[in-house]
Length: 301
Image 1: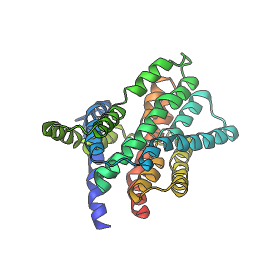
Image 2: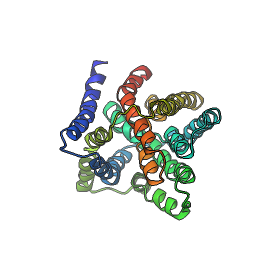
Image 3: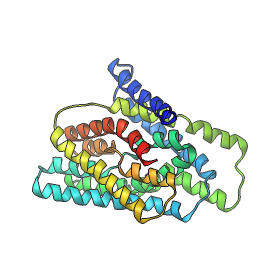
Image 4: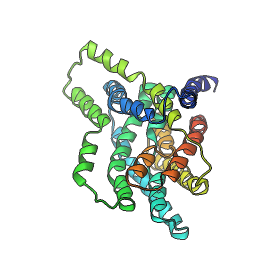
């Protein structure tokens, strides 16, 4: 227990530093998107590539990217039932739906890497790839339907999905392993070095995004409950029905129970939905996740 706490404390400190830097005006909230872009386009693919090269692929790993669609379909169904009995106006309804659907798997990655090293990180990346695919297809479509009504560009969504950097890292690693190619030592060193800042950059960025507010808290609380508790229940069910190793089980359950994703805020702003509700949902979900995800790790294993 003590060793696990020592691994988690630095992650929480990085989050607190991000929030502190914003309060003293060293960084702005908007700077968080720059840090996350750096993670998304460089650090995460680099770490994913170097991790995947050391991973032995198995049938259970192939299943992991397909699990997010089951989790998301479950939380979507619950949200529809809740909205049937407690209707919201169009913009708030759209934000509520996508808040319950988008898993902030980027938030959980530092915890997996700190607790389980490259083995946990690799399995989390596979889950994240499936999650990202659903985010930029079904969930983005849901946001467009509820928002600006400007139409849904299938070509644009396909382009976003096919250009996901972690997907290319996975593809490249699989091809290299399949054909027995040798990656030059300088290249291996580069990818490992480029991947190392993943934890501090993600957590500092989330600290910058963190904006606690009591506005729309009642609706946000319902969305957070569906997203995290509903996801947790489905994660537990999936790992009961399908055999996975111990680390994969924790990765799947914790990823399924991840906080509301920050793309909720991005999509709400872009598609003219309820930005206030999205900000409240994301911020309080992150606050719960900071303490809830480590506790979940502890109780699971």
